[in-house]
Structure formats: C-alpha cells, structure tokens
Image (cartoon, rainbow, N blue to C red; front, side, top):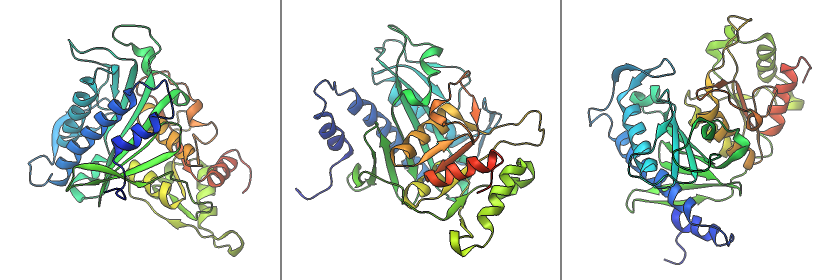
Length: 338
C-alpha cells in the first residue's frame, strides 16, 4: 500500500501542510467538485441505458438547446458546492442569473463558477466531454454574495480545473502550484494521482480549430492556419490537425501532448465580431491551467487572465496552448508574418 499513488484528498492535504495558515477549505471544495464529477461521470457512462440522452425542450441563456444530461450535471454541481458551507454564490453556464446558496446553509468565503457539461453535443456519440470549474475568494464582506463576487478577472482565481469523461475519468486542477491530474479508479471510487506537475511539451506541431468555420474568420486567422498547413521542413510544417469539438477534450489533449487550440471570433458581420466561448466558465479556468503548465492563452491579442468581465456570460475568442504557438498566432492577427 505504501507504493500506491495518493488519492486526491491525500494529495491536497499534503500540499496544505506546506501552508501553516491553511484552513482545509480547499480540501472540502475540491472534494465537493470531485464528488459531483463522480456522480456526473456515472450518468455519462450509462447515458444510453438511463433514458438521459436527448433534449429537454428548453433553451439555456446561451441560446443552446439543453440536453437532459446538461440539466443533471448542473444540478449535481449546484448541489455539491451549494451545500458545502464554503460558497457564498455560484454562477453556471446553464443559468442566466447568479445562483444563491440554499437557505439555511452557511455562506462561505469562496465563489464558484462552472460549465457543468462542456461538449454536451457529443454525448450521444461517445466523444469525451467534461466539467470545468473556477473558484475565487469573495470580494464582498458578509452574507450572500453578489454579482461583483462573480465578475472577477481570471488572474484572481484561487483554484481552477476540470473533470473529463472519456476512456477514463480524470480530475485535473491547479491552485497556482502546478497542474496535477488524477484518474478515477472505479473499483475504489477514488481519484488517484496519475499525472503530477503536468508540463506542456517544449515543441508541438499540432493545431486544433474548426475549419468548417473558415469562411467566418478574419483574413489574418485564415493566413495563420494556411501557414500551419504549408509544407516547410525547416519549421516542421505542415502541422497535424486534431479537433474533437469538445473544448475541454481539445485543451486536455493539448495539455498532455502539446499544440495550439483556437476558437476565433465569427466575422460574418465585420462590424460586430461575435465570440463563442464563455470567459468565466471556460476560457479563464482553462487559461490558468495551461499557463501553470508552461503555456499561454490569449484572445488573439490580450492575455485571457487579464480580461475583466463586464457580464456574467461574457464571451471571448481563445488561442491557447504552447506559448510559442500562441504568440505566433498573435503576430499573425496583428498583421505581422510568422
């Protein structure tokens, strides 16, 4: 047993011992997310048997049709975090307004934001999907939290992570001390440390982007992607294309294998470019994880973690992955050459 990898709880507790003022709150919060991840993962793995596939018939605040499993995952996250006594307010991609903690539950010092089930359009084809979460310290002083607690830049995060449901279920997180991954052992019902101190490879020659949207991109984005695909032995081109269509899965692969993922703004109307990804629920937490692993994340010009949201469901373009590749994309978007 002494050679067995530590569980998620054991690992977090060991890290907290290096911080004399630690209260154990992170252990409680991350265990709450892990519990929700196990519950969601269980339903994902038997979705075709549990009558949980398909649409609910309603549309969420993003204008997307809500899957039954979206609703289930949302309830699991709200239930696990809202009952922890450590949260003062929550924000979910599935809800238009902030979510209060239940009556009678203590309001804690932290704020939680989450995308309960990223990539849910892939549920019925068995492709990897995931749950993304972000934790902040509250900025209000007491009682139930407010909108100002939720509208904080990504640089103020105190923890961020995701649970990915694929060939295995993995829990990946950072608290600003590196990125660590844990794989669920179904026989134990525990997340065990499998990827300690994840670092992006120094060199990566893959890109991930939905080329079906080429006609909606700015000319600079099209020029960048063409550069990636143009053969050139000196730079290792052409790069390989890898695209799943589930943000958490595409970023997870890039985190372990390297590369660059991009979701540029839609430029069908050049006067009103429209971004797709949610800053608070998707871009900011994934940006911090990738930065902690040695990578970078921008909206094409600005660091994602420096963006200050003005609205709960603010959207952003995203270029994320190996630092050299993200910076190269930025030079293309600025009108320079490679």
